[in-house]
Length: 136
Image (cartoon, rainbow, N blue to C red):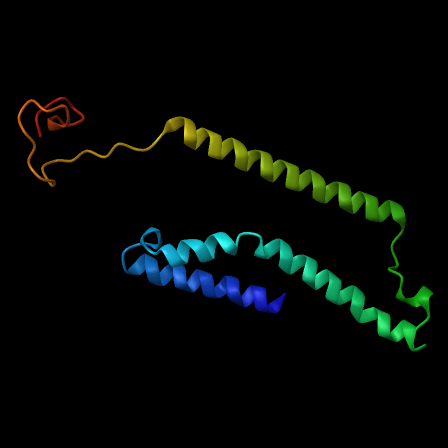
């Protein structure tokens, strides 16, 4: 869990460095690493949970703790309410995220006016006019 957290921080620093020197989209290796790091947050949470649960077991096996002492002190209703709350919040966040991405996709890419900064175009070419209809 800690190792994955450090790897995610390292990826963020690497992204800042590549952003400073031309943009992360130009580094194929960075993009592959970012793609591979996608599920790292989920994996880190699961690893932390397993570590916490497995960490209790030796005390029970060697008789240092009783099994009843290792059980969490919450009732089933409390666990169900917590799970329902998390599911509700994550469903809302996921839905809003999907709607936002779909809205961005429907808008399409932004058109940026080229006011004479690019190479000259032939007169009468479709790209020879600016957004206002005047020749560029």
